[in-house]
Length: 76
Image (cartoon, rainbow, N blue to C red):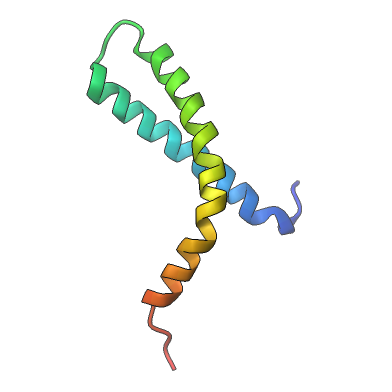
């Protein structure tokens, strides 16, 4: 098992993996339709998307946390 101190890194990894996979599949289908090689085209797009998404999530997460904290009302 992975230690708890790496929770945010593991969360970011799986978030990037799933979101890049879903989005690259949807965009590939939207742009190309159900063509013969769509599965392999999608896998190639997914690989590229994940390489971009993972570091972006790591960089953007602190900014998003600040934005969420700004917009969420704290009950007193």
